[in-house]
Length: 178
Image 1: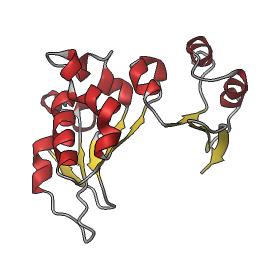
Image 2: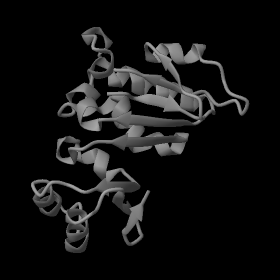
Image 3: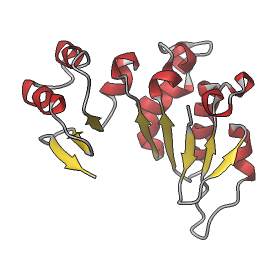
Image 4: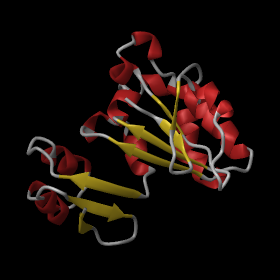
């Protein structure tokens, strides 16, 4: 799991979210950092408190800076949504970022192989999605929950290597290559 705050090309590794304040900005005054979780470091003490991370991102965005917040392995970060909530669920910062972050210049880029393990609110609040080829057991989940229409399900089931289905609200989905 490797969440990061990133606004530039050079990404410094930091031990915790509070260390973001010590990262030097680049020549465009962008600050970038990556925080490694226990899967990457092998140390269970490096468990990331996502609500603490969300609070820090919210504070940085309120300083008129804007934030691109990326989460690799979103399903690990969510862990059934429990790690997103500390105390009052209505005040959880990760929920706040997903529902009101856009108005404060917070953009969230999140990746996962197991979309069915991600809270439904994350998907509902997403403007864009890129879906790579999925195992056939995920496709019924997409259909059952209305995430993809029949055409999109057929496309996702037959995507080749280096292809993904790009979905943007208000636009027809397309196959992209990289």
